[in-house]
Image (cartoon, rainbow, N blue to C red; front, side, top):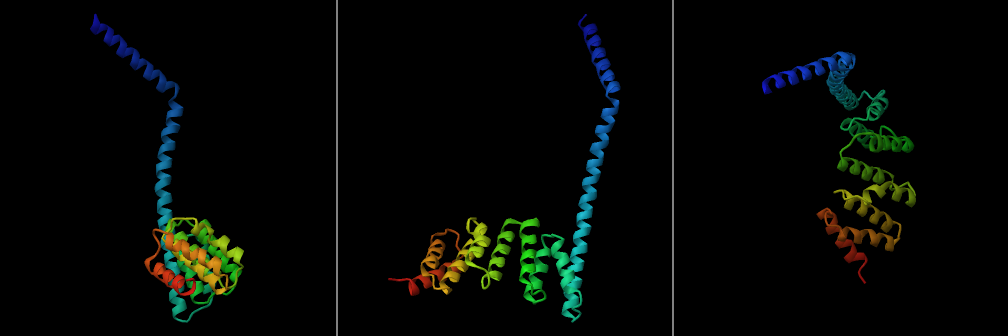
Length: 214
C-alpha cells in the first residue's frame, strides 16, 4: 500500500513539473537565453577591454617613439587622446609626459587633464593620491592658498602613504610665504603621523629644530 502511495505521489510530482514547464516554457527559454547572452556579453566585453588596452598601449609607445626621434607633430593631440581614454596605466603616463617635456603649456588644460585622470579614471587608491599630490605640486607656484588647500584636502584627510608628502608640501608652501604658524601646524602633523615617510620625518625634525625652536 505504501509503495502504491509513493508511486502515486511521484506521478503527481512529475505531472506538476510537466505542467509547470509547459505553462512557463516561454519564460524559461527567455531566462536561459538571457543567462547565455549575459555570459557571452561578459566575455566579449572583457575581450574588447583587452584589445582596447593594447591599442592604447601601442598608441602611447608610438607617440613616445615619435617624440624621441624628433617627430613632434600632433604629439600633443595624440597624448591628450590617451589621457581622455581614461586608462589606469597609460592615461597618467601620457599626462606626465606632456608636463615633463613641456609639450602642453596651457595650465588650465593641464588641470582639466589632471581632473580626468583623478576623477574619471579607475585608479588604485594610492595611485590616485599620488596624482593628487602631483597636481598640487604642479600648481603650487601659481594657485591661491585656498585652491591649493581644496586640491590637497582629499589627500590630507586620507590614510595614504602619500599623506606626509602632501603635508610637507603645504608646510614648505606656507614657510616660503613667511606664514610660520601655518607652516608649523603642517610640520607637527607629520611628526604625529604614524606612517610618515621616514626621510620626510627627518627633514621635518631638522626644520622644526632649526627654524621653530624657542
